Length: 225
Image (tube, rainbow, N blue to C red; front, side):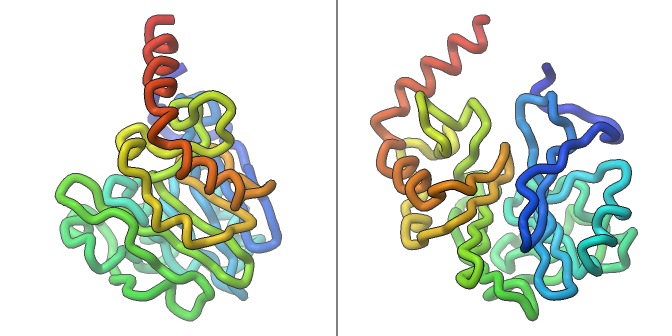
């Protein structure tokens, strides 16, 4: 099983379909489990950290009209430019991610407070020279979209955690996420959390530090295996 697959994805898997959108994993067998999201707001469809796949445009046409691609993490440019060019829309990037637009081969629009004409508000989560990340929250649907700080793949989770803090952030967990009580959490790596999402988030933040040794031990065992 590769850590990160490459090439055109044809056997992708749709996950977390709900009234307000859907998500997909382009390469179901890769360890990273990169997840992408199509957020539906009225007739508009917003693509968050998208990885391109065969048949994507046909699926999106069933949801509405693509309004733009969104990059929530400086390392998650993924296929946002190619998809944006194909749909003749911009790539939306948080305004504090100064270095990202130069690497995107498509028109770029800055996001300040949220996605234009939508219920999704933008919040800053991490902003340092090595890591720049924002997240989206829709108060009406109680939907939280986090690119990297938390995830559900095996290398994010320790023990029985349903949601885990990124290994590099375990000792300084993103506690600003704790201000929200989501009913749905969509992540950039793995399936979303749709049952007791607020509880899963609270546990992930509260247990992040003391479960760190276990997470690292499990990672070593997996590597040796």
